[in-house]
Image (cartoon, rainbow, N blue to C red; front, side, top):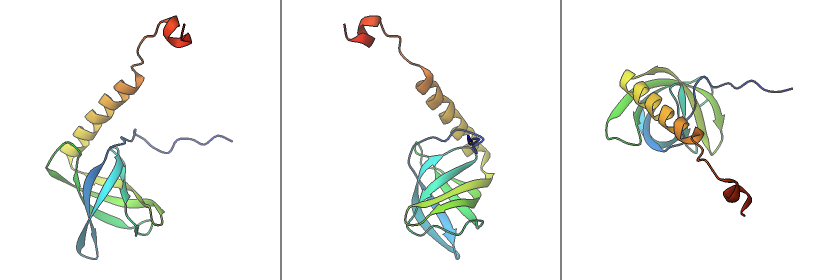
Length: 121
């Protein structure tokens, strides 16, 4: 039985900073992939599934922090947690979408090869 992909939009494998709120304290962590719909945060102590989390996200190319709210959808002990955005700053969403398009275009642009390059002859 094949599984149906769960993600609505492609994830981008980059790294950036994220501040997330736990018990009225902000913790700094790294996100390791992101999409318009969510992100994965590396943390040794992931939050429980279903918990709502306030976020401040720094995209890998900039200095600005973007606000977001997410819900923990999955967790891996000692590894991290995947969050689905319930709110994402519109500018951050636009930047993520643009980065995803560029990344997808780079992946799908396979250089044309001659037969000798493919066969080594």
